[in-house]
Image (cartoon, rainbow, N blue to C red):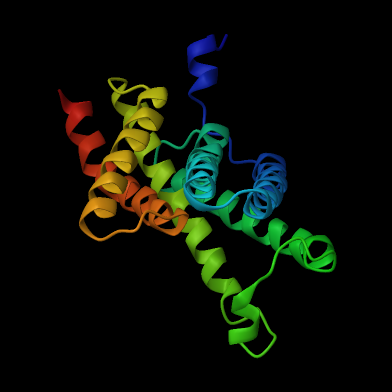
Length: 203
């Protein structure tokens, strides 16, 4: 008989889990994008930057760790499956974006104009970035799970702390503070966190 602890640590890489999680992730992304667009219209100045930065962090946490919490990766193959969830989430959002958000003019997308009215020059980059975030989150998750010394909730906390520190540092050194800077800081935090998690898991 399988114990609850063993069941919780089992890798879930079946088709239903992978595809279903990707669709859910894409839907959550759409909700976040709509909220971001509405806040951009309702706020301005420092209030807009703070609200958008919070949304960026929340979205980053979801995209980086939702797949990991669903798949529960422990090895290279399962990390790849979690990364696939991130890619499917981006693909799902692209469908929602193309069919609903753009026709209704939810937000103004300058990148389309740069690309001559087409978004297909940058959309694949978004897909790769989404898979990259899920890959980083799954990698850190697998280290924590295998060691048993770093909790998954601690991973999220570490990411938030490192992101905030980088955001403050870059803001004061380079400036000005912006949601785009927060997105950069969050991604860098995930990269920095991997060796940190590895070291902490060995103590």
